Amino acid sequence: MVNTSELRHRKLGKKNLPPHVKTQVKKEKPSKSCFPLMLFAVITSVAAIMVIGYLISPIKAEVFKDVQHVPLTGVFSVNEKLSKGVRITGLPGPESVVEGSGGKLYTGLADGRIVCIHPSSDGEIGAGKVENITTGSIQGAAMSSDALGHGRPLGLRVIANTLYVMDSIYGLYTVDLITKSTNLLIAPDAVTPVMKFPNDLTFSADGQTVYFTVVSSLDGITDVAHTIFRGDCTSRVFKYDLSTRKLTLVLENLCTANG
Image (cartoon, rainbow, N blue to C red; front, side, top):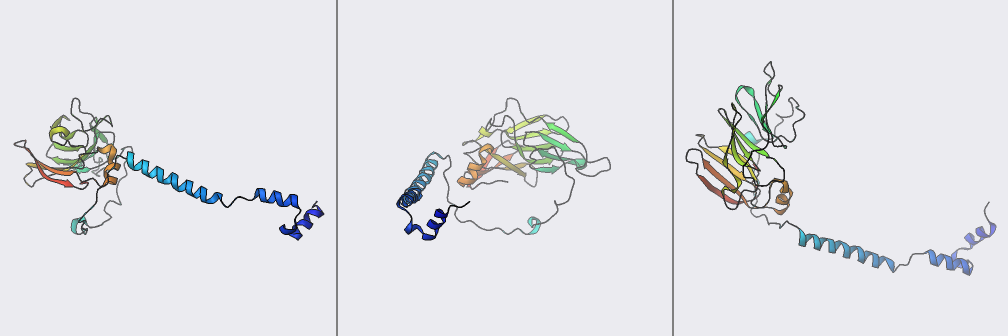
């Protein structure tokens, strides 16, 4: 039941309210002077967080200059060739994938292993058993970082029965595909500054020289976000002569040369 006096007060409006009711209304109404103070406090807090974050951040951003757009044409044109195929589960973070003899596929995983994916019994590539080629660790080898506790194979190439691996932790090594034995060719500390993030490799036309990239001299693969946000321009390209075992710097001061 609605009180008749309450209805009367509503009709009269706030100006005609009794004194004790006016006092209650004034108490409940928020003060306008609070809003500028609250806004100032919020802005000051955000600014303080930004300044502290800037001071303690491990990232020192670089300025990109002379950036050129490279059109994707020819063999690099956008296509849908990988939209169809055989889905393989249980392989964490496959990176580079290369094909060896007999339709065998090789790829490196996030847990450090390199695996071989055999063709099926009727010859379908990628549809057969998965075989471990390496365990993910090279005993006694120098490392760019021990944060992962194992290697991280990235770039792969197959030459005859030898798999060449560019590992972001161990550097450049080979795997004999017959015996499964490994042979370290270039450790991360083979140059100065050290290779924090070895990445990918390719071969010269005669197969005697390996060219490879190092993404950063500052951050390893576990700190890849720092490399990206900083705009890191400490990437390098090296070449390694397989016959003379001579390592030569080809290019430096590149910006995040991934691939």
